[in-house]
Image (tube, rainbow, N blue to C red):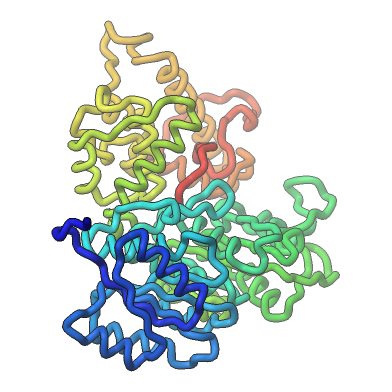
Length: 510
């Protein structure tokens, strides 16, 4: 006997597919759902307006129907808050593109695995009944490749997922905007995985981490004076029929942007130092922390490239715009990091959860990962029960690592604490490394008359890395001390690698 206090959900199904109807009826029987079936849009609208209005609509239109968007718009105007699950068909990319303007529908594309339809209905009904977007199922966490996961718990992220799925089937360049650390590379990985190019290579190029000549060789191939004189393959040629993700596209020199635009328009390009034309068949995904409008207005995007990228644009929302995901993201990161370091995961205390909810997370998911990592290592004992991420090691731009440790880890450097006043041998070694790194950069700047590009070449690192370190150590030419000379500068021992950041080998959630 069914408890009369338990609400029976009413499902309205508009479909003529026998397989879909069988699945819904079986799921309705096992979940005590009341299922009504219709094949006519007018009848469905009448039922939505009736006193016995349904709790959810399952909309399954045949592929030859050309008014699916209009029907969906009309039904949403009648019941704006009604959950809707839409079943799509192969070949209806245009409809999928139009669906991105709707925030509500959950979209399923045939063919889908057994159980996905029931899970989608459950998710929609739970969201309607509870108003809680943080109830997570296995389908909310989607592996997109390269050790990255897309977590679509909130409405805004599900809408982004639908938009990504529609653009994945349009073989054209896409511009991805979003704040640093918000997850632009994860979105690019998902675009690649859902596209017809998923069986081919996906590669990333950081346009802001390389000087112009090296970036040209990285993209187009050719010889460079900084390495072996023999020509090398560029990513555009190496990644044939795959996807090339150009991160920080607004940092690419304008003449290289023009060369890239010409290559995309003509399908051909010449490597650096060569006149031999090569064909390009890779798809370009470009990302920037600037919006398209900002990049153009600040003249960081040439008109030729803008015309190619402006047709399709994705925006990845900042973490502060989707804070309801924080419990899910924190739990997911905690378990992944715990598995990586082979330690048991920690439960976040209610006070820490409250503090994290009140924090704006300017570093987005990248900062959240660092916060979870530090909490996993120290828990509430070292940071205190009311630990705020702003006190963390990665949260305050422009503050040196030594200052961050003094503030966030409360290092005791009194005469009686630790090793030589340091809390641990690791802290002592880190401090020595930073001092050596600062001295090496200062010596290089001194030798080049504070020509930062020349100093970067002397250090054999990127110009961007030198700028980052100058800001980190708060160095400037007016108050620069005379660094001790140590003969020829041995840059191999400086400790600068790549873009100057220490990147974790832990798979990221972006």
